[in-house]
Length: 150
Image 1 (cartoon, rainbow, N blue to C red):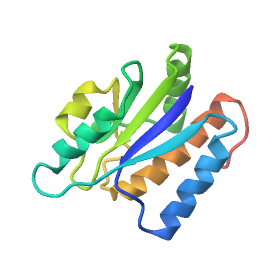
Image 2: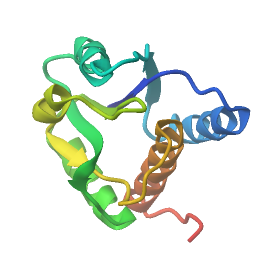
Image 3: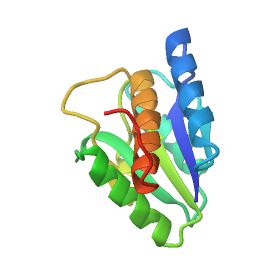
Image 4: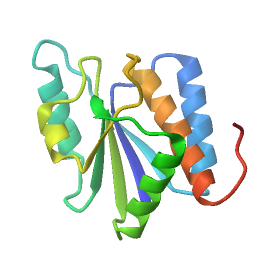
């Protein structure tokens, strides 16, 4: 199953780019992953505009997981089980949507097959991308029964 992360905005900080690049490189031999960036917007309608851009990048048959503070928190083992279930579902593409500074639109959350909360803490949306990649890598390693640092 191919995994796409659709994220609002570019990563501006070098340390975040380096971290994301490292996890993409680690993941690709195990589970092909790509990052699709959509343009950020400003103003009160930013989540709506960004949400439309995210939804325009989806294929109809893709599973969509939305990253949102209102979603369900999971342990790394829960995530691994959910990822394994998505793979068994026959879906060829899993898309994870990360909103911009003002969050995701209601339309993206409504279209989502699953809404995932990384934490009750507030993160920069750029940091969320790095955390998602690291957790995906951890989940893949768990599912393969391979060691990973604890």
